Amino acid sequence: MFIRELKDCPEFIAGDNCILREILHPDKADLDLRYSLAHAVVKPGLTTWKHRLKTSEVYYIIEGSGVMHIDDRSAPVQPGSTVYIPPMAIQSITNSGKTDLKFICIVDPAWRKEDEEVIA
Image (tube, rainbow, N blue to C red; front, side, top):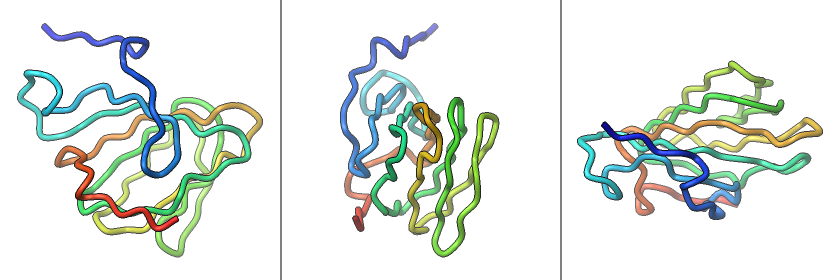
């Protein structure tokens, strides 16, 4: 059995400038996984830097409100929203609320630095 607590995952600034905690990654634990799982936070009024991944990604919004930007489209997101981001789509997310925007990120296959391009 493998259980990991969010508080035990080191916090860092990700390539897109959000606050990230990597929860699961096949390279960082002895787990048979294809995907990676992370917890992200965007502070009120901020937008992550535009970036794209060679792989698909899913965001699941936990807290706060925001606007998801994928290529030339934008849509509001809130707790319970699930967003699919196709490979190579230019993406960013804006926190349009007054509290932290918190969401889970699933990247499949697992996130790798060489698979991400920050456009900023």
